[in-house]
Image (tube, rainbow, N blue to C red; front, side):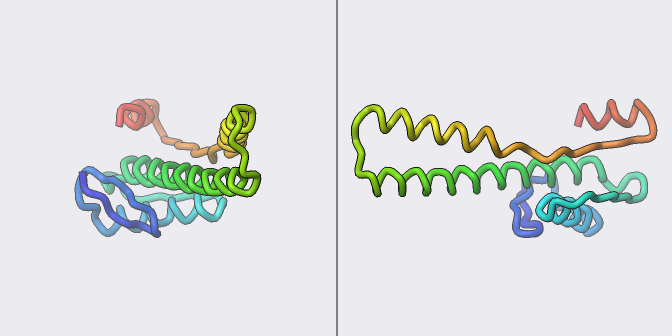
Length: 125
């Protein structure tokens, strides 16, 4: 599947997105990045569901990778500064890595639709 850079985030999309889909995904990513609420609409058939799902998942993956990189850097820095090599320190580093991941938490993405059949279709996608 093709990958497009949208608002600095690599987004995997099943085909080259149309301009309206790119704009929609950019707004989704901007809302997620800025921590703001977004009410986005677009005419029927423009690929709203696919655009929302692809951009949201791409942003979540990007955030997770950034946090892992930051955590790894700080963990390596801690290890280097203490110059510790015994088993107890290794267990403590692993424990801290897990704790930082657990505290991150993911934003809520609320998907609303007019009908149950539209929600069912979204869940299948």
